[in-house]
Image 1 (cartoon, protein in one colour):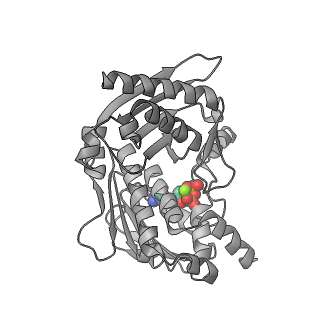
Image 2: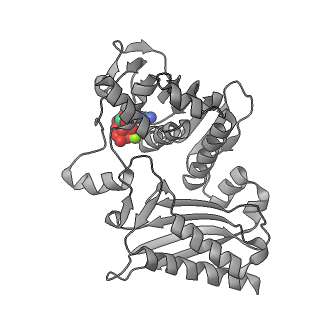
Length: 330
Ligand code: ADP
Ligand code: MG
């Protein structure tokens, strides 16, 4: 049974960056205002995510890492949102089958926190009282220690680290009221660091740099025709001043970080036609749709989504972007 669980877990957590994504999303769900990530060896030796969120109650610790245990499912009607957020209650449990997981947490009003380690879905010992300030710290050590083939395919720690830093950059420019950092273990400087702000452009400047931030133009769309696609989009797109070797597309749908290859391609086409010299743009977009219109692939870690009325939505966004680019060109 444990082999089956390990294989299933290896599907949920495919690389270090998938573990980081799950941990950071948990920290966001816990209403954190500060999330700090430390990584050693591209995440294979250590991934540590510390937050200042609401913490985990003592009585929830024994089942925290059981599969399908979630504190986020209150009623049957939530099934729709389960779908939009991927699998529920799988992430932490999965990590315990393929790594050494230690949780340190304190809830509001408590004098001390608790520390506990998990293995194969269960607590290894009773929670131990310990000093803690606020929130939760989760340490994932020796990821894939029991999957030697997987470890062999993940020998490029620089590549895995840059995927993690890239992920944090994306979170940081969407959740601008949260401060984020990402650093290598032992490094004095963080590679990604953002402070809470009210301005999206400030956040983008601090994470992606001045030249991106300077080139940005706001785009918006609101479509309220109930018979077709009910959606709302807002974002920032680069103008002709920004020249890069490849496109950066940061896309959030219903506040979840996703990829939509069809939309990305469609926007590349618009840029190629309108701003050929700056045809590899920087694009940040946040789209709000009725949850039942978003189909996240059944697979928990796939970021690719498909949308109901996808063509209509893409065409609408294309035309908004195109007219914004044309007006900037005049
Ligand atoms: P899910 O997020 O789908 O509920 P997870 O396996 O990711 O499942 O997490 C299991 C549960 O652990 C969550 O429902 C939540 O109650 C708790 N949890 C995990 N990480 C944190 C955190 N950083 N702060 C507070 N609670 C957390
Ligand atoms: Mg989760």
